Length: 461
Ligand code: NAD
Image (cartoon, rainbow, N blue to C red; front, side, top):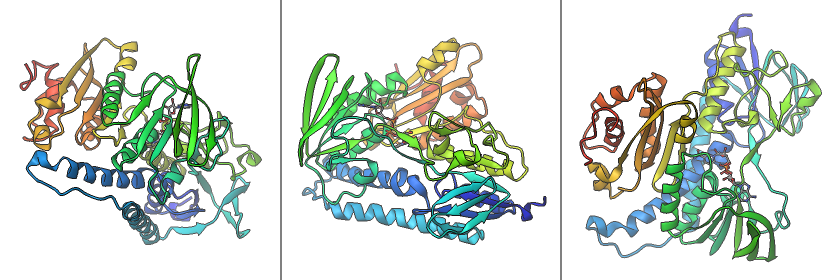
């Protein structure tokens, strides 16, 4: 079938769905996108964008607090929480409007409503009864916050990440259940706004899954910033009265509790396709996620899935790559999804970014060598007064291939792209060490970490 005759329907206007819609339209297909909430999905409305906008406000407050270091005396500051939230909302709506314009410019038809499968080529919009038929369908319906089955979890002061983003006033104290990415980012934002914060994390370290050395270093910094971190803590229940929540947790046999005005639940997210009726048309699911192959095809011909709804690596940029892979295959251009080089970023202070294998993973199958360079040896980091952290480069001893790069430090989330590119090109540490880096930049720390494995760093004894 010629591409301009192919009709593709995309369910979900988040970062799994809308870039795929634009790609499909660019390839010549007739595209319909169905979204029951705001375009942009979790990332633009409830995740990446609003949380980073809030963290930027906390960062501005921190800059004012530290201004004297730079010779600037300031007469203090005041936090206008409603203005902080308004700015966050303005950033979100500007980006959402941008997404709408991009889709409209590419003649993508936008339907507002909730889709459910009628058959393998038809979905019906619940709110209007309209039926939409297509040659190909991409499911990109995303995820929702996970819950834990404990007493008091539905209490009025218990918030998921969406509710935190619509708070109208700052709580005096919070307990954050879950010390993963969402938990730690919210903890740092609220601490920066002046709230008293305690994190309860089930595992021995914050951000389980991160390279352990980096996770331990981050945890020390988070604790030093005044956030109370309790690890190995299994939360048992929430009781007490409004504004005074008693969160009970066990460390081994020992039961303790902490009290806070609000409780934030950040124990992971779950694929969400509950309203789609996928079982009606026999789409295979496993462990609460839609099953796809490396071409993003489900078991039902012509139906594809991408993003958080398929589980696995639930990151915005991965969802986008999966969505694009899906529509290429749907439109006859063979594409295979690769997860070999996937960066991940945490917007703490300092930031964390990593790509490839952690030291623990690399040691399982490789004879590894590790190069480290601390930011205290980097001139630009000193200029910024942000000398905490390091770059850690993990490579294969025999061939020098870079297996993983982990950065804890200033601008880590922007700098990781250098490692992404290097690893995509299967670069060796020698090549990275010999690539001339601009001076003075924090990126020189990446080169120097590689140099420690290729003749030695310059700015380290
Ligand atoms: P997560 O899986 O990163 O962390 C959840 C944490 O909760 C884990 O550390 C886990 O050990 C802990 N936990 C689970 N049950 C618990 C219990 N009963 N008591 C105490 N701790 C418990 O999930 P998240 O932080 O909610 O994030 C959800 C998703 O959103 C993830 O896929 C994440 O990658 C993504 N996300 C990414 C970013 C980013 O890239 N910067 C930011 C936010 C969210």
